[in-house]
Image 1 (cartoon, rainbow, N blue to C red):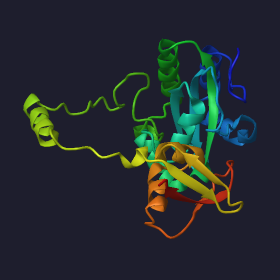
Image 2 (spheres, rainbow, N blue to C red):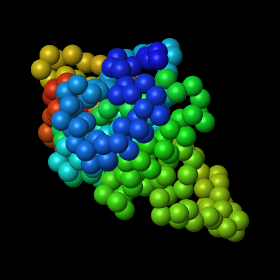
Image 3 (cartoon, one colour):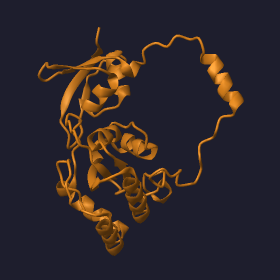
Length: 245
């Protein structure tokens, strides 16, 4: 199986992966991954530019309690940096990373090279079910995977047409300023004095593996401390931020 990620996936096929989970049992399988994290662990790099993007099913594991989150993406570096930065959805995982710190989490590629969205959805749903990693069962997945609703089967509340109209009327005619996360920002690496410009706060946050909130706080001088970006398996660096003029 060809893949554009730098480390081969744990299994070449969904059938092999599910068979191993079933044979060894969920707890033994996850414990094995944790033991061999130096072999299977994948370090995301937002600086990597790839013309081809794999359909990937990945796993994020907390080494403190071996709870796991399973997800899918066609841009693994961007998605994993979002998770480790504590944003980008996946509320259960984001809360756990804020609680335990991302040093205690490891990312792994379970499957790669999935050809289309249908294959991605199917693989994600089956892996989540086999690992039983729903938040109610001690995991971090809230949804069943694919395009499924939450594991509890509860859909979001729908707004009535009257409510939608009132919201629209309240916003109509108001000028919209540039969103903070769309502002250009300059990151200064304190150790070297190097300055790197980014077209938006979101781009800077992804590159530094932190949340946009962190970049905004530094740029707005809400904190007088530089950020210690300590990502365990990721680059260590002090940096500050400022908005471009």
